Amino acid sequence: MNFEIYCDESGLEALTRQDAHLYTAIGGIWMPETFRSEFKASMNSIKTRHKVFGELKWKKVSPAYLDLYQDIVHFFFSTPQLRFRVILIESKIVDHYTFNNQDAELGFYKFYYQLLHHWILDFNNYDIFLDLKINRDKGRLSHLKQVLTNSNLTSKINIVQALPSEQSLGIQLADLFTGIVAAKFNNEIRSTAKKSLIRLVEDKIKHAIGPTSKGEEKLNVFKINLKGGW
Image 1 (tube, one colour):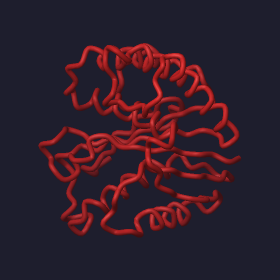
Image 2 (cartoon, rainbow, N blue to C red; image 1 turned 90 degrees about the vertical axis):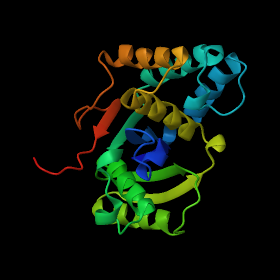
Image 3 (tube, rainbow, N blue to C red; image 1 turned 120 degrees about the vertical axis):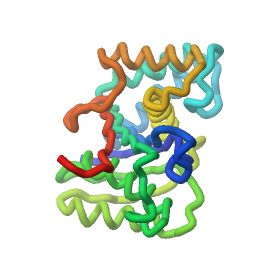
Image 4 (spheres, rainbow, N blue to C red; image 1 turned 120 degrees about the horizontal axis):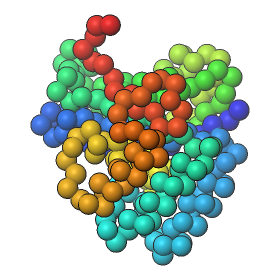
C-alpha cells in the first residue's frame, strides 16, 4: 500500500538552547495516498466554512479562530485514514557534543529517523514530506532517505522531500497537532483558546496527553529516553 507522511516540528530552538523549552517535538501525519484528494477537499471545506483562506498553524489558534481549529480536531478524530505520531526530545538531556560530532543539525535528523522508522511497516511504499528549512548540509534529506531505506528493506521509501508549509495541508495539520502536544509538555500556554483545544484533544483520547504505547495508532506520543538503561 502507498502512504504519505507529512511532518513538522515545534520548539526546535530547544535542541541548541536548553533554556528555550523543556521539550522539542517532531510530528507527522500518516495517510494512504489514495486519501489525499479527499483529505484536501475536506480540509478546504472546513476553511471555507469559516472564511479562512490562509495557512493553518498552532501559533494562529486564538479565540477568533477557535471554532475553526476545533472543527479541524473533530475532523482528524472522525477520520480513520489519518494517524499522528510525535516524538518528544527533552532538551536538557540532548548531548550533541558526544553523540552528534557537535552537530545539532545531524542530531535533529537522527530524531526525525526515530519518528519515522518505527511506523514504516513491511511491504508498503512511502512518500515523506518535511516542512521546508535551510540546512547547513544540503544532503540531509537524501541521507535520511538512504538511512530509512537501509533499515526498512521490505518497504520502499520513494521520496523524502521538503515542501513550504503554506503549500501543504498535511504539513499544516502536522503543525497543529505537534504544537498541541509540545504545548502540553512544555506547560507554557497562557492562551485560553489553546488550552481549550488541548482539552478537546484530551476529551477525544479520553486521557491527558502523555506518552503512549508504541501500538497506539491514532495519536501516538513517543517520549524518547536519552538516558539509556532499561
